[in-house]
Length: 411
Ligand SMILES: Cc1cc2nc3c(=O)[nH]c(=O)nc-3n(C[C@H](O)[C@H](O)[C@H](O)COP(=O)(O)OP(=O)(O)OC[C@H]3O[C@@H](n4cnc5c(N)ncnc54)[C@H](O)[C@@H]3O)c2cc1C
Image 1 (cartoon, rainbow, N blue to C red):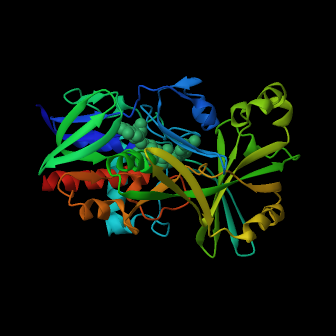
Image 2 (tube, helix red, strand yellow; image 1 turned 180 degrees about the vertical axis):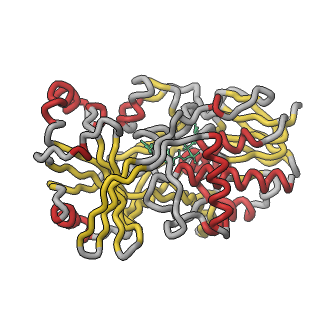
Image 3 (spheres, rainbow, N blue to C red; image 1 turned 120 degrees about the vertical axis):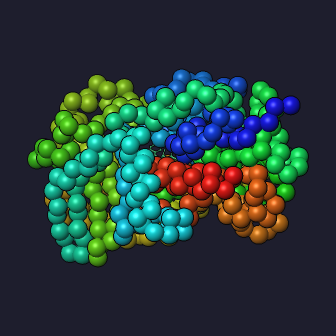
């Protein structure tokens, strides 16, 4: 029986950072699966990268009642690299993971290390506008120069296997049995980096006594607007997206992205119409997404006899945000409507919590409760309590980098 020192579950941005820092007897399982699922229920931007029937989705679960789905992508840098792969540093007054870094300087040092491996274009300021208590800062976002893929980080002395973790079992101290779709592996330490969705499923399949799990997702809203003055901001050739960072009383209050018209952002019925008339529409129509401070969805996965169910709650939903278009209109950006999107479309997934015997545990406390803290570790977005509005991938990577260094010092 061959025993790996470490097995990493997950090939998203966190898994890749962790794996590239580990020593020789380590293996990474990408999450790629044998079963083919129909991609019709996944995000249009991700559909661009996968076929109709694909094995690049590790887990997909739909809620018939609420008409939404969540999924975990496999083998293509996880959920990263979509919508232009914006790669943000958080500032000291943003919400960065204080519980993990304690000092902002340590967080910044780790961001710099990530920059060396994954360089990004610099953020550019376009214009600043003020209205009442609001400050609108228009920027062209920092975008990754290259997508996050294996080849960026991984040396060939370690193993990468295209397979998906089904579940795991502790045999004895420092020995974990990992059941995958194709095989059985053994390791001393199993590091979960499968993201809040992937980790949730691995845990649910490993422990029947879990009642349910939850995680948070920033609640996005969609907006549509008209721009008859042909402002260069919405049609700049230099950037696919234009962002606004909106501060209220000097704190980040909303983050919004204006997209260029892309037929694949629309459902299949509208797509062909948009394809034909893209040039015409792009003269005056714009649309994008907006996320407001403290507006999350909480997504819940229940299990019953290995069948999984999905539900979700909106919380901190503030009616005031529906009127926010008036504030845009005052700064002469004509927003017609801001609408709530379906659950699960925020993609800022974080903060996995587990209900065990009616008590709720964050993932690492759950691991301690089951006395697995010497064998099981989790370093990805699942452990982050609260994140800011800007796209969080770089912060997740800095966190993983920091935690894997601590892990190596102790093991
Ligand atoms: C459409 C879209 C747009 C986005 N835009 C941006 C953006 O512009 N900028 C930004 O910073 N962030 C963006 N994000 C968010 C970003 O993708 C996430 O923050 C980031 O991917 C989280 O990283 P992670 O490593 O924690 O998890 P994930 O990326 O979810 O990675 C999880 C990995 O685990 C694997 N896995 C799952 N289950 C198993 C299993 N059972 N066994 C083995 N492996 C498994 C998966 O295959 C995957 O490789 C976007 C996300 C989406 C979907």
